[in-house]
Image (cartoon, rainbow over all chains, first blue to last red; front, side, top):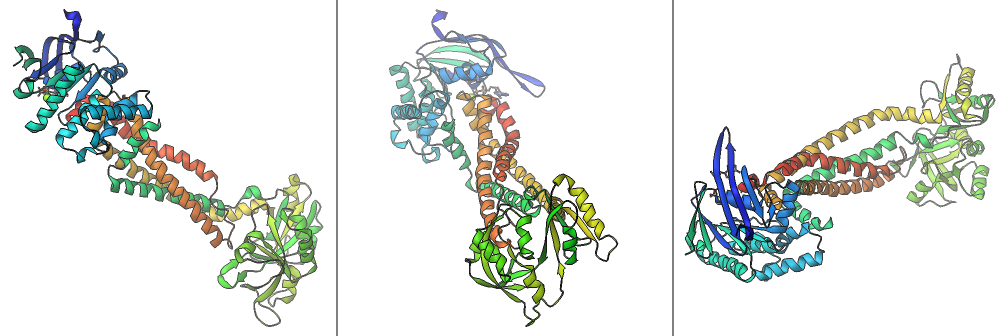
Length: 230
Length: 385
Ligand SMILES: Nc1ncnc2c1ncn2[C@@H]1O[C@H](COP(=O)(O)OP(=O)(O)O)[C@@H](O)[C@H]1O
Ligand SMILES: [Mg+2]
């Protein structure tokens, strides 16, 4: 069964050093996430949800344990390899959108493609296709500050999916949005999961958001507790 | 790598005022640098253009004191001297007092033997040699005042007065327009006899003697022999190679040149601090964005290169504008100060040195921010919002 898991964590621990004291954020975590899942990761603030997501996404490294994604050990990769791996396999969606303020929506979405060998025309085509998918074609030439929060987040999702990653990681994607905009984002994520088969892991502390996922996991004091989807 | 240009460009537009001020400081630094290069070359002359086979005999104490005309023939008799030709100051002004033109009274026939680099059509040269009230003028000065062969120009002297009417105007008929490969294309040469017989102050005195030697290797020895002729007389001489002569003049100016270089260095240093500070500030504001770019897969080296490219881009834009302005100003300067010394415009090498400075200063300014950006850990960067 474990062989079918897209994401496989074994004995993952993460400590942070804060001055002289060590904070144990995650303890010996085991986790399997199948391909095509839509997993909501819940838990109180400071419980380590973002930390876990960052470890899976390869922007942080575990203190102990192994992380295997689509059969590749990411915890032992070099920084350079890990960067290339992220570019090919992971799309990140952040709570604060994290768009580059100086670039238009289209250029923001194009950004990950600059790392590929695609031609300018092809990059533009793909960026616009991604914008179309999130329903923002009309706003391609707007800067982030000319967009609403919900629109910014849709640009963020377009940027995350433009290079067709295996895994979509969302850290409180609706955390900064009103209910209506949040629902639109959740609709979009759900559609990406159901229609495009994207595997999604979403950190949230909003039960309403978690209800859209196929599975919900609770993280508490560095330990995981399972719970069926509502 | 052109695909990153829109991003670099957009980052420059982030804080327009700040970018403009930084650019302005870079423009000023490079403008000053370009002008200093122009001045330095103008002040120190072009010794490399000096003839190696030429000596100059002048008054031992000062260039502006006269020598007896009789010295000319005695110099001509020294062993190893091919030809010698005398020159004297005229101190020419044309129309307005500020139009001071380098005007010299020369022994005409020997002048062309000593200075083979002065070229003009044979019939013009002939006309000049046959008419003692005529003159030849440099191509640039002729262009500047739109003089043509055959024009008579009323040159005024700020040194001499006329015997006949007490005035200071010497009408000179332009017999020819010369072109000189040594860059001296803004002088006027008139006949010494004409000046000597008509001026009130002194007679049979000359400014200096230009000597052409048969063998440049013997220059030092010949110079010593010339000076030996007049030793212990009331008017002793000092003979040096033309190159040394130009350099001697340049050395006086060289101190100004050194000062200018120090000013330029200080300006560049200030510019470097301003640019480095701006880059640092701009990167600190962007830590979160750099974290995002790294998350997307940009490597440490990648973001470092972008920061470096941004700094070099600003420096290059400012530097090119500054050097362009310097070239324009130098051109204007050439015309304005042509009467004092020949300014040949901004030396072409300035562009090359400028390009090196652009890369070096841009890199230095970016060094610290680059190191910061490259080292930044993603999770730490993302926590900064
Ligand atoms: N980069 C870091 N350096 C030091 N401590 C950190 C870092 N990231 C997270 N932490 C600490 O780890 C704990 C878990 O943080 P986080 O994963 O962000 O929690 P959550 O996302 O569940 O709110 C917190 O106590 C936080 O202060
Ligand atoms: Mg969090």
